[in-house]
Amino acid sequence: MEISIRQAAKEFETRQGKLQALQETSLEIKSGEFVCFVGPSGCGKTTLLNLVAGLEPPTHGEIRSNGDKVTAPGSDRVVIFQEAALFPWLNVIQNIEFGLVRRMESGKRREIARTFLNLVHLGRFEKSYVHELSGGMKSRVALARALALNPSVLLMDEPFAALDAQTRDLLHEELQDIWQKTRQTVLFVTHNVREAVRLGDRVLVFTARPGRIKKEFRIDLPRPRDINSSGVLSYAQQIQRELREEIEKVLREEVDHEWTLKKTDFLRPAGIDLGSGI
Image 1: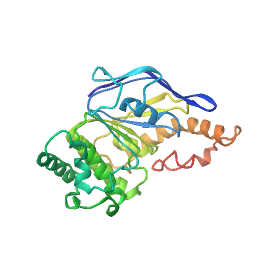
Image 2: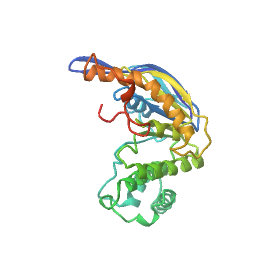
Image 3: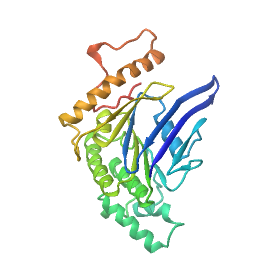
Image 4: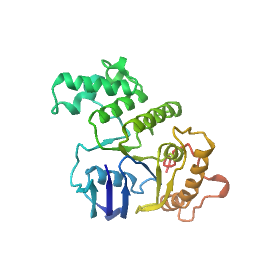
């Protein structure tokens, strides 16, 4: 499914007045593309994702999905948040079936749920409850639940941010494999630069708030990708250089107007979330 973002902007009303979260932004996303958004905290990445999801209306401009104007959430666009948001009173298979309840009879629901549960390698945990799962397992269940709905677009908002590096690495491998099989359109928000390079066809760098797309990187690397490969590291370093100025803007605003990054203390390694601690 193609996504067309046309001069979309978003303002929020606050006690201090209007806050512009996203400047007018235009973007075309082809069907089957995997596009990653990176940028400093508060730069409008998640705001743009929410506009595409139909969770928020744009203040200006419009979003179109396969030519149709987005005015509300739809089953063609499914959001996966940082928190898995599973129902603790349901077991794993019931969580995956939940979105299918009104669509089909129980036998067909169970068949589809098991298909996607096996796809994320959790078939033997179908009767387990949420409190019995690790963080990585919860993320897999959330992914299986989203895939079971057969959406045309997956909107992923830092889905692996809370996981340890080893678990995240395994989920990167699984997500790459699933995406290559399904070829769904994916928009993926992250603070982790190497994660973006490993997963994305394109990485879009956002400016500090009010956000806009500063630069686009097309990732010309074969798949599957190793997060520690020289190719991934090379792209990550280029993207970090673009981000440096935007991170400085945020820190000057929130910490000290005279503050600046020294060349010797640039943030964190490329595999670390750039938003942490900001």
